[in-house]
Length: 121
Image (cartoon, rainbow, N blue to C red; front, side):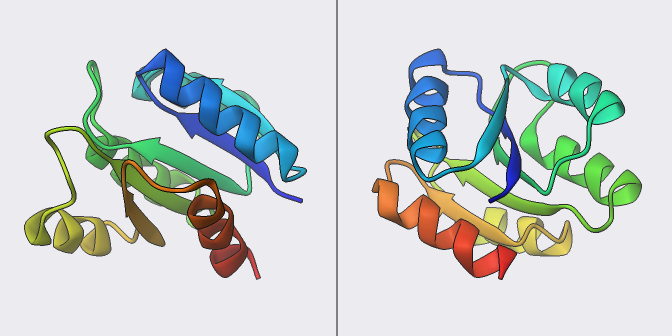
């Protein structure tokens, strides 16, 4: 299975996603924002990063841009929710940043697992 870096600023969402991913057999490292994610990325190797878009300190857009420059082969799933559903302009920006998938929250557990299976196969 995949070694995943999960970047989500809302603790309850992060914990729920972590549980879903671990139950599916993935190894998960949790980061509460893009700055902490960069620290983990400097020390460890990940197959996949799942990142929220709207976060304090460093947005998911900025994080994805930096990751694609330094870890070109890393797969990325972008997630966004609340008042920030993925708009067409956000989807276009994510495509330009080379995110592999984008999901709007809330999503069902099987949707995130299917997204991982799609991009990792």
